[in-house]
Image 1 (tube, rainbow, N blue to C red):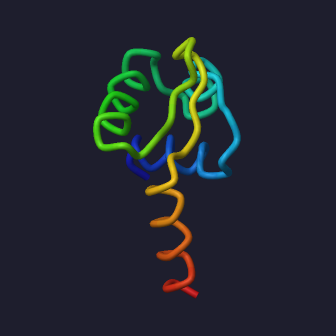
Image 2: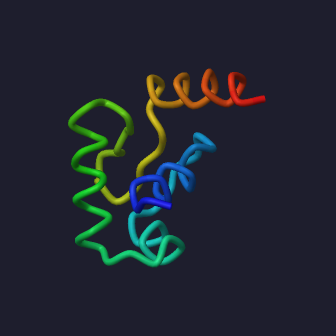
Length: 73
């Protein structure tokens, strides 16, 4: 599984997740997680709270994941 897929899989539940929690669970360095998140933020795929230490899946990515999941079934 690609590293970006690991991160998306972890946050796709729509709940807020801590940056360090993502790195620990995905076994990725904080720098690697931050680079992935920069990409996801740039394209509006995730939302970050004011402190920038928590994030969750954005509406566009959530909708995409839901639609592709029903296609796979």
